[in-house]
Length: 118
Image 1 (cartoon, rainbow, N blue to C red):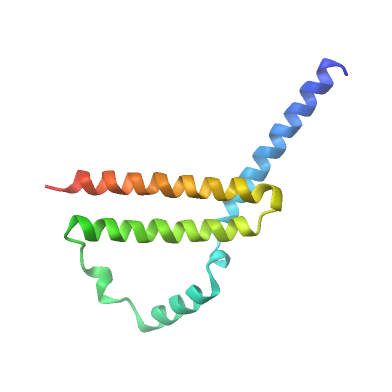
Image 2: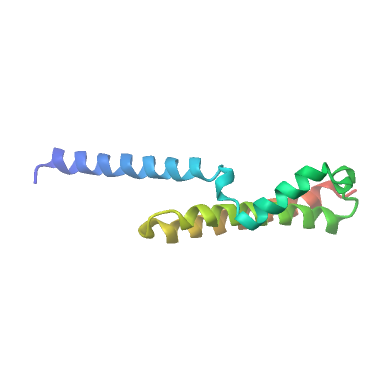
């Protein structure tokens, strides 16, 4: 096989991979990925107005870390829901990437909380 055909096929494969990756990333920001049970609970809470806890600052390191962990966990669950909609061949890589992002987010959360302590 001529060298230019090999090079062209490689370039096409890279372009396809980049396109699929971009497509997967754009899908993760949709509210459609929220679990239906969680969506119903969110709708009920929104109808009641902002809860008072939103306006209370987390004063302890443990409370701050717990809040950041909850946010990272919710992001992980949405990413996993997106992965479930991916083709089977991509699903495992997608879930590995989601776990890696969660672990990075948790490490950053710990560093953020430790940097804020007086």
